[in-house]
Image 1 (cartoon, helix red, strand yellow):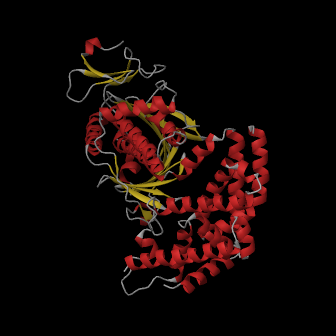
Image 2 (tube, helix red, strand yellow; image 1 turned 180 degrees about the horizontal axis):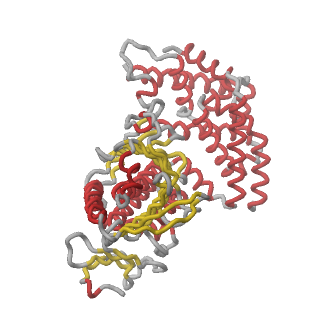
Image 3 (spheres, one colour; image 1 turned 30 degrees about the vertical axis):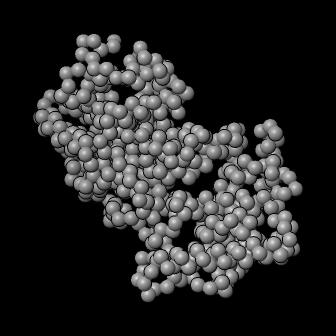
Length: 170
Length: 390
């Protein structure tokens, strides 16, 4: 695909998905700076994967791009090792102080980006996009039972990770 | 922590509506991306763009380098103007000084540093690194470099030879100025107009430096200072003296909302080997296998922000790219130490990297009778002054 054709296709894809990306990335970041950074990564991902986004699987692939962009933005925010800075999640607080909802929400947002690919997509589709399992199954190319399983496993993984983080903070 | 709590949080996130300004932000980011796309026309530039946007370490390193460049300049500024007592009074006695600072003679295109000086602290922003703010503590030789976009902070240590050189240099300049104060080497250079304002000028000359000060002829308040130190040329202008400055602007504490990065950024002890590595990087990465047309602070100022762009598409790990950026900066700091007063010469314009027969740079180390000559293959030889290249 030559450059002008590629740019034209990119514009069409960008116009099609910009609202979707804005919605998903905002929910995954909850922070304007992080959002902007994730959006930049997402645009870059779209540009680099125009062919895939022009195919029939585009609807599923855009989730992958959004989630990858989200992970990269979070990684820049908190370091490549994927660990939260202690101060960012209140872990310097006394042992009797519990993590508040905002901190937990921030941790959930971040940990979604660290879930296995299908689990993270499933959780985004189910909770952030409020899709039914039939649609999720279609996008993930699996059965409805499979989609439920991915969501369930994702929640289990999040629970495990957050419990570990909370324990380490005490 | 139970699964219901996590589900509740997920549902809450899912039910959030996207604020209108976030949609605008998305649109703007998207437009910016498309605009850059059209301007560059090459998809690999997007990898560069990504790297520029994301590589905090590169940006911090770049900022730190420029900080140190200006660090020298600023100290010289204080000493260098004590040649016309009436004009320099505000500079010497003001508790706060705010001004713009340009390295090089090209005011139109050269990066502009904006300085807020309170005692031994300086707050600095640089026009071609808009997300970088630096707080410099001259007393402790520390820099707090802030990335205002990523909300990250890092402390940079400039102790060691850099600090020593700087302090010695101030003493040197002051000595010179004390000698110049009543000497015939200070002369009036008449009146002229600068930016529509009538000014009166004075020039003070020493063996390796020249300071021109342009001031208001009625109030004696400095309008513009031009400083030449060896090959380094600096312009300072837009002065404001004794304006109130909030202490927080020059605080060395990490500001609220910023994350302190634990990365050690150490630019102390830059040596010849660092400089050689810089030349290698400059030739290999920035100028396609040839040494640059010129080196020196003015050129470095222009090249540093481009370094991230050039490194980005290289098929090497990000950490390696960052190391290359740091090496480049360290080497350039070595040059800056000599630039402000040492004996050195650059002759690498057009020379190909690997050319073992052509000298590209030579300098005289302190207390050495011979020069160190660096060749195009980056080998180094000791050469007597009489045998230096012409």
